[in-house]
Image 1: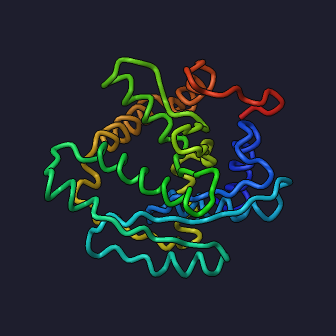
Image 2: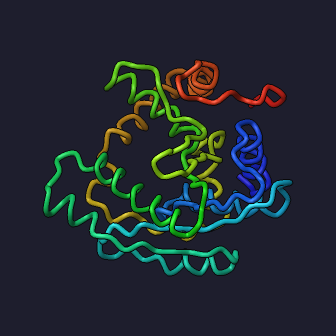
Length: 245
């Protein structure tokens, strides 16, 4: 996927759900993976021509695992003239050594988002951007069906009243396969997570299940995604009817 196509996907999602308003200061969560770095490129590119002026601030919450090298990401942000803040934490030690969590991902995500949101507010941001893509939306729906017995997926944007922050997901329409292509094309400075639970999660199970379903039933991803967009999920905002995905 070329940058122009990424910007087209991003612009459509931002416009469809009115994610960006004039004067927004948006914190971009950088995990070190391909998704968050693609999001950084997308919003940096969109900023150059979007009719509503906005600012960007990149933030990484360092979980404290050894071997997590962020030097290339720091250099990328410098080249893009985007402020970059690394939040040091002991989340990894708390979860794996002190609490010895058997299912660590949920607590880790909660603590990581908490630290990220606090730093975003401290830096004067009013919105935070997560790098969830189209496949994440579908996988979340599958996980909800399998483990909760309900039809649900996260919303394109969500207001967090306790933090006075709005979460936006500008990569909503981007297939993961295109992000992988963009990663190779742009040689993104990916810093692989040293988390010991990486690749052994329920989400990874849902990812493999979705891949198999799509192999057996070509086009099932597109149909599932359409069902989510048109499913009237509680909490989802109305899509701008002047634009259709």
